[in-house]
Length: 205
Image 1 (cartoon, rainbow, N blue to C red):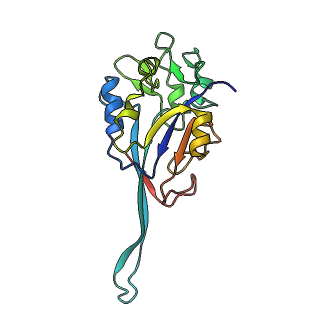
Image 2 (image 1 turned 30 degrees about the horizontal axis):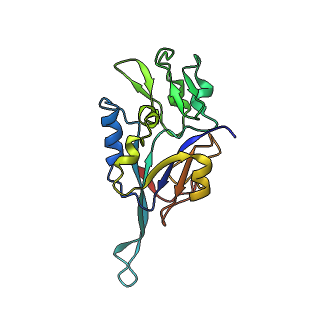
């Protein structure tokens, strides 16, 4: 099997602090409006009639959990498939990269990716995205987001090893069905996690 790096997220431990998001933005010196990693909160519940005072409504089934999301360096990377110049490609380590010299800023990849990973840099007129902190990894270090996580909810590694250790779950709300692109991602779901496509809540950044 070809080498494939991926991320692991323990959603049951993520507190939504966004330190990973800040660390990524700082490490890559991203301008305002660009986030290669972002933290979203998914929450829900409903209002029901009070059991004895029918004129009152009370909340029930309240839940909330957070997800840290970046490029998932997918097995079936939609961004690679639609790129007309070959600027988007998968390397020998499975990491999806964008060649700035070949990118024409057509934004096809942005439209194709269900995770909103490729992002357009208005200054350069080019697409940008998570590069798995390849410079840090080449020096034997962790990606910036992984080291920044105060709850140690983020990890990275070979997908075979991550799946062997943490299981095979790779989709919960508000993420799309994993069948679309087969993301290189493993998740330990929060106890209130909703099934992708059948959630009862709403997501927000």
